[in-house]
Image (cartoon, rainbow, N blue to C red; front, side, top):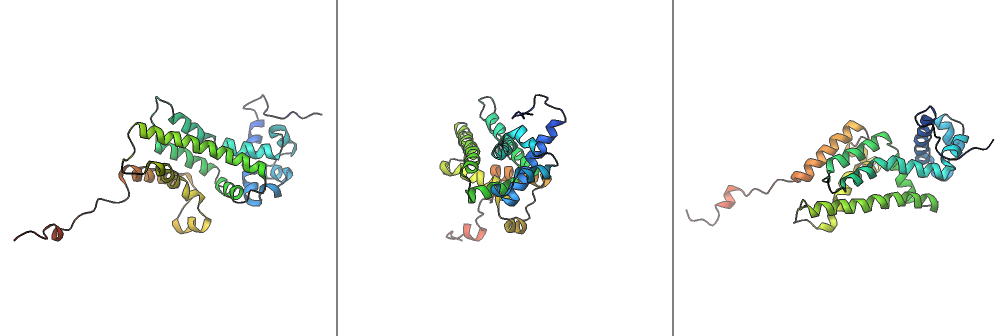
Amino acid sequence: MTIKIGRPKQSGTKQEPVRASLIEAAILCFSEYGFDKVSTRKVALAAGVDAAMIRYYFGSKTGLFSAAIQETLAPVLKQLQMDLSPNTPPNPLLLMQTYYRMIATSPMLPKLIQQVLNQPDNPQVFSILTGVIDNLLKRSEKWIDAFEQQHKINPNLNSEWVRLSFISLMIFPVLAPQYLQDQLGVKLKEDWLLDLANHNQTLLEQGLFTSPVIPVSNKNKGKLS
């Protein structure tokens, strides 16, 4: 029997959960053991399905990796694209909420990203991941440009560093080493991450520090009594 590669036509049937389970299992296995050390049989076993389903849905282990990365990050890419619409003002809070919900659903994804970027042993897998990240970064640059065109960026800030600051604020907690996450109380749970999104939004709007207050004694210095 010839197995056809690709997504079945019967969308919404019992076959769809199988595909989703394979993607979830792939992220878990690849992040724990590394892409090259994980067989398709191991992923299928973790998903509780037959290994032939990987070829059926994705064509190969590399195809599974590509689908896992692209489809998991798809909500963030979609939100960035929506924010670039001329009729839709960029929404930092909604973007952070979308990103954090994605992380809460796939908490092992940051570990997988770190692993592939820090140890690019497989050029094909490295290229797949960096291609998706480059797409995100290009959209984020246009996103910041849209803010500048609307005069919503603080003119006292270095415009070249605004994107760096925003991305650092949003992604550092989930990409930080486990030790730092533990020390800082980071939890990759949806409720905690959404609270963080609200905190970040307030920080963006109001700043971190209050304006310096000059003590009364200093105000009166130099004045004649």
